[in-house]
Image (tube, rainbow, N blue to C red; front, side, top):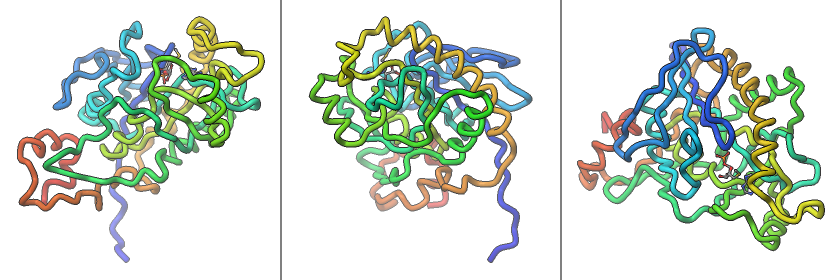
Length: 299
Ligand SMILES: CSC[C@H]1O[C@H](OP(=O)(O)O)[C@H](O)[C@@H]1O
Ligand SMILES: Nc1ncnc2[nH]cnc12
């Protein structure tokens, strides 16, 4: 066993804000800056700043003013931009519909699993010329979940730890038959954005966790003839205030210097590359440098 100390990580906290959350509170030295990536432009400029001396980077997932729908988000550019900005830990905030009676509008869920039913999106940084298969058996970082749990308790915000988020393609909401199907699968909440986001964060070796904020009962619910954007946005605005308080509380806890992630999110690529070095495509490798440079160099 080695006696050498664990390498020290000075966390940089990324926050991806979903519907209704286009800024965050309490940041100092704020500056919106454009970050280009080998996969194109992210949804918007990134908001750089500090909170209690901890570096933070915020990205509104759909862009400020919400011009981009779920299927057109450049998920790869969004995660690559976070990686280029030095982000080590992502708090993903999302509006979701509830698939369970005990998760009413206004309730928060610290998601621990996903079922990915999205189909019209680029899902990997890797491609022909450099293939990698990372594990997403446990798709979120429990360390970030622990901090979210602790702070939600302190803030007295109603929440549930654990629950499966069903990712649908959208932009239309579900049919009643789909909603009932997802309930029969045991899913807790439904949304349109967290995949491939979580998969790409794993490929980029960034710790990632989702705090889902219930805005509505999906259409399975007897009191709910149909989901409307108006109703969702109204609750989302109430949720956004809670989300801002939560983020402000989480950053000082998550931002303390630490060792490597005990769950291994930050080493996900270590045994993932399968393409023989002599069959790797130089053009793709140079794009991948920002994501996988840590494991590609030295091979
Ligand atoms: C306005 S409700 C539908 C919209 O909200 C969620 O997005 P996000 O995860 O970015 O908060 C949902 O997935 C849909 O994109
Ligand atoms: N009912 C719902 N279905 C899908 N995405 C949502 N986002 C918020 N509510 C939703």
